[in-house]
Length: 236
Image 1: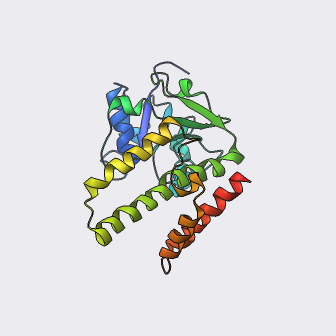
Image 2 (image 1 turned 90 degrees about the vertical axis):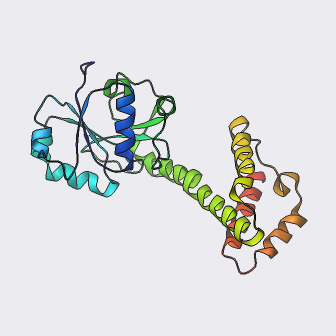
């Protein structure tokens, strides 16, 4: 591929806005199109754009490509889903959670991209970017994405439970709880294999049982039990 690739970025959701910010920060030229644009898609794609960046929802990726197959013919199409594998486009998933707040260029540069095994190399698709990247097989994508969901979404649910309960049950201001969250994240960063603390780490199962009983009537009791069971199996 040419080192001066032409991009057409399609989408107007959260991910698309972050991609726009990153490409702008890196002074990479691109055309953007989304529903509601004055220009028709065929007009946006009529130029020299040879890579389509399809930043739309997972369920819309294949229908969009099939609907616009004539317009997108002879284009390299890249989608950003972590779970979907399709022969219609190459997967290139950014391993990151994207909020409404846009990030700094230096942060975007650290994001890992996970590509389909049969995709071109990352530096072929994005020669002006130097992000870390890996490739995985199509039959590994579901497991890969499940790990992403558990690490991000499930822990977010746990922390939301913690912040809400500490505030509503114990009148703790959320700002007072942040050092606990920050130290937990730092422990994982410094030593993810040995970061566990508390009663499980020290084998204090009397305290564990007391914790479980205290959650009687709370659906999170089963979550606590499940984590204890998983930890026991790990130690066997």
